[in-house]
Length: 314
Image 1 (cartoon, rainbow, N blue to C red):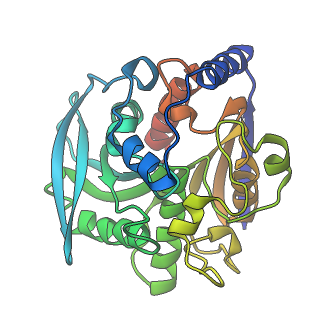
Image 2 (cartoon, rainbow, N blue to C red):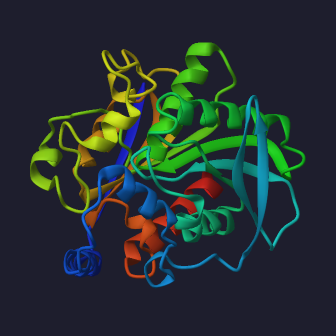
């Protein structure tokens, strides 16, 4: 039975900060015109600006980690709260980036802040990206890293409890990993945290019609989607909203952004999930607001909210 608790956070401060950032980004000078792949490679090399992205929470002790999986090794960064040495739940966190971009360094304010505020160990993963590694490479990395974390819980100072979460495309991978575990009969994470998740493909929703192009475009036929998604009918773990049933999945915290073409993905998934679901919508806030906590107080608020939620459920 779905037990949905929905909240809306309205703030004139959040709205004003969002519009100021959108204006700032719109006024940035355009660079030389590149083909999509050249532009992607250039974007991957760009380091986050701390004046937008913030910095690592000093309440954590980050360390780099190599995760060895069959046929590959993945980079990860572990954030351990400094105020305690007691074993704690481990959260696997997956960055956004449209399945083709993004990096763990882009979201260190969020991942370190969630660790500190939630009294949890956060493992932030650099999963494989398209077009070099199309679907299901990133999903396989998420699924197998969850198993790796179970096997190495003691090394991570974990207490055996596991959550999975992410932002945008990373949230899609988190949701997909839960579907794979359910359908394979594997151990499920104890909780899932989906921040402005991308859970369908070429969706025609009210939020798409209202907000497409507000920081993010999800228009059909875009180059990024063609690099990641397979042709033909898409399997449910790639587009979790198309799953016939969402029963038997972990309890969830879902964050939505009010000015986001993906807003309705979050709403629809929250409505369909079976079991305890908490949906928190940041009205008048844009997609990816957790990536800009230095200028968007909604991002800072969300990190503390996620931390408080994890303390409550764990």
